[in-house]
Length: 448
Image (cartoon, rainbow, N blue to C red):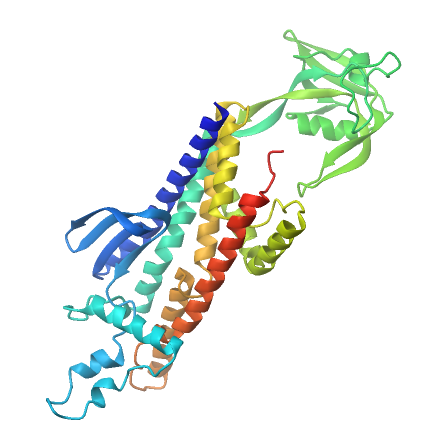
């Protein structure tokens, strides 16, 4: 049953990723068509085509590897010099210099540039040029390229809203779940009280499971965290604790003892400190948060991811070093799709209530969409952020020429950046390969 649950978790993650990719590409497709760009293909995945269907001028399909997607727009770049020279080509028998004026010279990267130009020219074949992407105003090009990442952000916001406001956040309530009979040393593996172990202050005071804490030391509390804060700050001082039991309130006197316990700070870090301790635990239940909590959490996480994205090469290097040295992975380090899928499987296979697992899986998928949103905005080709930078640079050139009353400049030919794009792609492939290998050999341990 555990293996089946693991596989279900992986499948759900893959389906969720495919939906995220599909919505990302729709974010490009809809504004592109709205602005009149001819879109030849809308594909989810890479590799061999499993299914496709042509609707109007666009072929919609699914490919074998659901690790990405794309839409094929006419004229992502302006026509190559060869293509524009063809219109004024010399008559038969005349020198061919004019027709080859824009052809790249020899060399590997020059050949790549030429191939990119030829592929781009094919998307312009049979078009009057007015339906090409490069002909759009700058603001429309930015909207088209920004649409994909924004769809991932919107999906993440929706998923986090479901988790926070639809399901709720597990919160310790003021209802007592259990009372320790005795006090055990911090970090002890002892599971039962010995005769000489001191009784817990909560047991001595008569606190019982099912009691609802109303106030501590004269302060009304509405959460177990609030009650704990008062108790931890008052070791060896007797406190009046008002509890509701069987519908009636009664006051109990509790003297927290000084003990070493793990304390979670405001930043989430867990440290050991000497605090007041009484020996009771609270029941937990899902508490639905205000509707804005989910979006706020999504935006906060996007900011955190953006803050560390520039460290990606260094973090991948550290991941490789930990893998080779056999050290534990940084739980906050980068993951590949394989690693995220593995976590999804482990979450689905845990012995926890179904609602807990559903909430965690939705949060995991939301975090994945946050990563896709931030990653695609990196200002390097072939990522969406790179295309946005090219469009903005084109706009700056045009604005500068207009300011100085000069003729409009030629559109920016981003095919010249193909060598840079090639280097970026190779770097992404290498980093992706390292992360996949690490996720198989030295996976992140989040669930123990």
